[in-house]
Length: 135
Image (cartoon, rainbow, N blue to C red):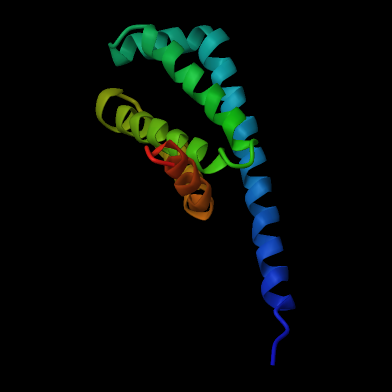
């Protein structure tokens, strides 16, 4: 018979690994946002994309907000979901729009964000249920 200690220990380890992943993702997305705002090479990349520089700023703001959200309990799942959507766009841009695009990093970030969103789906459902009328 089990007293449940193994399950609690496994859940604790999963939670610690998730927080480490969230911190790593948050740090990377803050770095990426910094690059979007201040790296001159990004201006050229977004010129190649062809949608204008406004997209660079919007992406930087979304990545900054997502990075911060990853570190806030209760918002981390929603932030990861949002960042996953941003990485869908980044991956598609690298594959279909840029001549010498490389979607490897956006796809890795997409996968990591989806993992966090899946494991933090309880946070997402609690957040969405608070938004529904009649509550």
